[in-house]
Image (cartoon, rainbow, N blue to C red; front, side):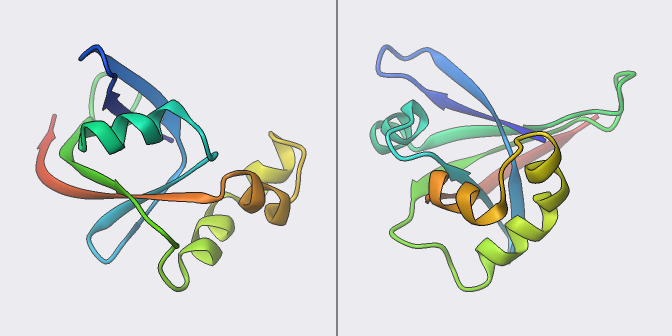
Length: 118
């Protein structure tokens, strides 16, 4: 689980819990079409991405970067994403990977520019 924070039209932050895959130095997130985070990225591509810590204040990672909404997912990304989350898709969302891929049909690519860890 990660947290993607985008900038709203009024300049305020909007954080969204997201599933993600890291591939070739980029962070990829899938989104439902029409989600606010897509509009936010189109207007303000600066984002932050945070990973969950270890539950006691350690292993914290914060990544600053720029995001873009892609026309299509890069080759192999969807398969990697679905393989990573297959058990959660079935157990927590009570759906199957094909339906989830159709529902979350938009790919966001984050280019990291700064990483901080604690």
